[in-house]
Amino acid sequence: GAIITSLFNELKESGIVIIYRDINPTPENTRLAEKAGADIIVATGFDEGGTLPGTALGTFSIVPLIADSVKSVPVMAAGGITDSRTARAAHALGAEGVFAGSVFIGTEESRVPQSVKDKIINANGLDLLLFRTLPDYYRSLPGKLADKLVSMDKAGASNEALAQTMGGLRGLRIGMLEGNTDEGYIALGTGIGNIRSIKSVAEVVNELAIC
Image (cartoon, rainbow, N blue to C red; front, side, top):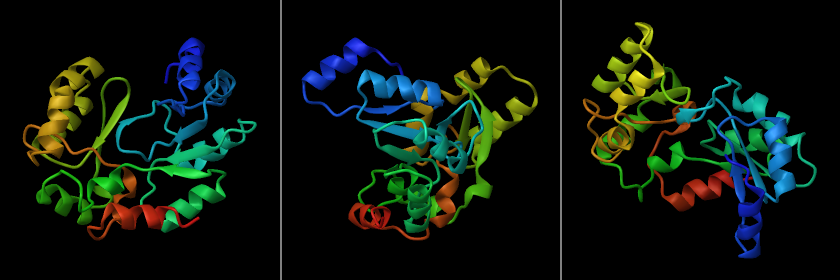
């Protein structure tokens, strides 16, 4: 999310496309990123999985706000986009593309174990747990560790204590790549209710590119 003009210039000179994604998108940092030379802006809503924005604006609210803030740079929508319906909605809100994550975790090519894929296609957004951590919030499927984090949050634990208990990338690896939700967590967005079968990456891309 850092906007460093000198770095942007160096990347541009090397022919690299800059996709700017701030975890807390605002019209102000969007305009700064566009001025610095970003080629694409990602508008991330609170519907996303994993580390969440500190401001609880959903995808339907943040995408038009960011799309209306740029002059000529295309905007990609992120958060809860998992099928052709949500992709069309993102397009209607002003996005020219989508930035998707959760829907690819349950694909045939994904490295996550079958147990995690089964959890994805049998869950919906109401099953997900939300708790505080660093920098702000996190979302995960239920499990021993995730349940503990929610309990700690309700008991008033600090964000630092919650982040330490999560175990950082180790907790993510154990949960996502090993399917162990006793010691790890499975980060997903609220749009998982639209994922009802395991598809190939090509099928998912073709569906999201419907617009």
